[in-house]
Length: 218
Ligand code: TMP
Image 1 (cartoon, rainbow, N blue to C red):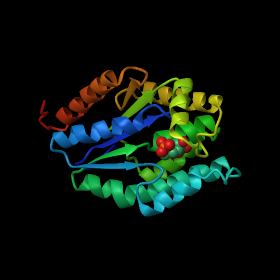
Image 2 (image 1 turned 135 degrees about the vertical axis):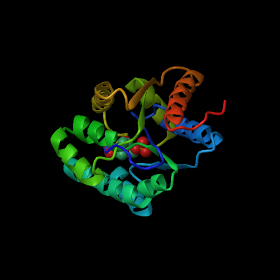
Image 3 (image 1 turned 30 degrees about the vertical axis):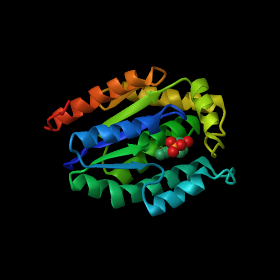
């Protein structure tokens, strides 16, 4: 079971500073122009409980948090997000676009923090019951370039304080996951000029619309 609901579920992934936020806005307005009812959300977060869990997860005062706790909190937030917001919206025929989802748990808690893949898979199966995004964009950018962009944004959170090798692991994990299931992922070179990036995003969105039986307005 991938997504049995009438709405489609799109997720955005990438290392810090790869341009998810800018592209999220572009995707939201492009889909809205097609007459699609869009819900934009994020992980960890998206509901009051999940946003409260996000605050704990990103808080630099909790340096003692173990990788296991981090993973369980990510999935606790995700479970609430799925049941309270994502699934009801998809059932109602809305399309949901989320800034991050479970691929991030494999990349950050799995590849970068070193938790076993099988553990994450177990929790994913329990929480998601076979539910997956229809399409996942991976915005790929060199870690150096991404860090420059993040620094320009201001103060770092608990994750952004990690070192380069941590993010290199995250980046490779995303690329590996995309290679293993190319039908679900679209890897985008986020170092290109924004217009090129958006052309590629739009192309992929068009395909998804057509596959969903929607007419595409130019
Ligand atoms: P953001 O900066 O994209 O809003 O995401 C918050 C941080 O949470 C980011 O550094 C990635 C991290 N994260 C995980 O480590 N695992 C997860 O499952 C998710 C959804 C996010």
